[in-house]
Length: 448
Image 1 (cartoon, rainbow, N blue to C red):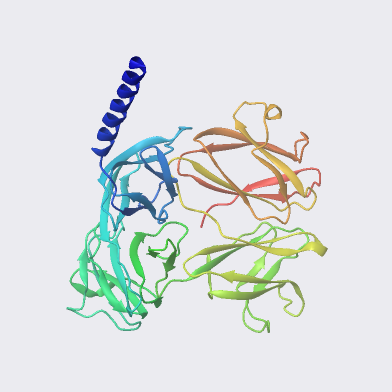
Image 2: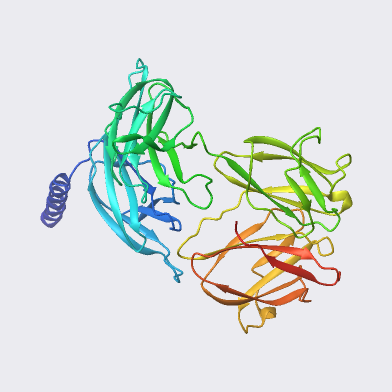
């Protein structure tokens, strides 16, 4: 019995020591929120991690959703897949002592392999439900713009000397400002000179008891304007703010042997001049400015406006590009809409492929290193179907050969066709019918 009592006493002592040690650790009293914002124009997807656990992934101009964590000390890590690698590399780390009821935004900028991390802090607003205002912050995340003055006013009110709400260098964010709920425009100008307007947004609306962060970025090849402005809300939603002078574009591709050489009209009466003339098989246009919204387009035989061969609704978005492909046989003729991804990424090359072949409506595309037997590998693009939007993928830097076969077969329809790639390249390909129905053509379409 004596030994039993002694053992129980030792266990109790150990338990007391364990409790004492546990009580000396930091205790959380609340939570803070963290998100990442990617300002590296040529970056692939970047991941934000808390210690070793992934919080979210962010592409250029995008933000991760807010994640909530106890008010303790952490190491936040940033990872991405660098050029030529298969696995992600840790490219930055940021220690942070999280304070409760505080919002943190990690701005990731600079060189991809060794980025800069700028931390913006904001006490989280506790709305009581009676407020009639919203809160707004504005940041400069454009790497090329330089210093800017910022104006916030009702739409249509030009910037005037003395009315700027602040001046920003790259990576800076203005303090919180409160505005009555309603519609506003944000304007970025040269510092000290409101006559040099870099960007003036269309009206954006904000509801009371809301928080928004507005950032200006360098535009990329997917934008039609030189700069891109986005708003990020506390609930995780975001939106694009378009410039008052921004436009949307369409690029037209004639990819059907069943469609005659055509004129394209953006006029239901067919009385206005066509927007495209003599659009022959295999032809493509430059980016063409079209009205934002739904455009009802008509294809007619060149010079014969009375008989439309094809009509289609095409939706144009502000500040964005749209591709329109005329494809299909006589009874399946259609216009396919597609929003391209033309942004160059420094860690890979990009490819998009459209199959427009009536004679070979379902094909495989093989992409293999030069000199490799394509029959022993799986296709890079399998089951490319006519009538489907372009398929996209990425590829490493190198020298390759391309072959096209009927789907699930190894009969060569075309190839080998040489393809030399470098990181950052963007390729567009269309598979066309050839006059010989036993083969196809693979055309590389230059970017505008």
